[in-house]
Amino acid sequence: QLRGAGVGMQDKLLLEVKLPATGAWYEFRVPLDLTVEQSARLVSQIVARCEPARYEASDDVDLMYCDAPYAGQQLNPNELVRVLVGKGALVDGSHVALV
Image (cartoon, rainbow, N blue to C red; front, side):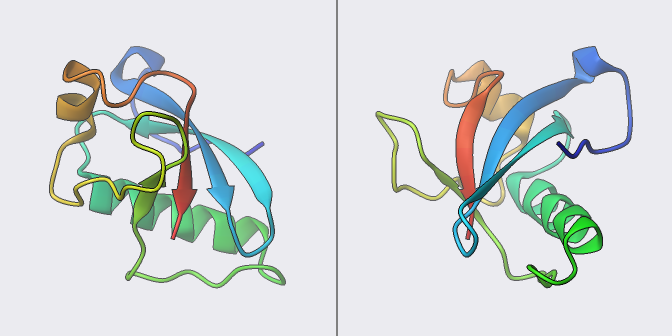
């Protein structure tokens, strides 16, 4: 399990992130005040550092919903994680894929 660094737990959202290339799942706590794009890049960088033989970081990454009712849809890269939580589109433990 991998965890992002930063602010207190109350200011973060727990995400289960799948890396489709390997099928592996990772657990991250992402800061609520990052955009989806910033969160995806952070996750990409951390996975690349921890799994260099399996994954190479990219700035051209997105997060895609794995859970119904949004499964298969990409998250808006410009949206703040906090806004998606407020809308109920993301909750602690949401499953997303790094694509």
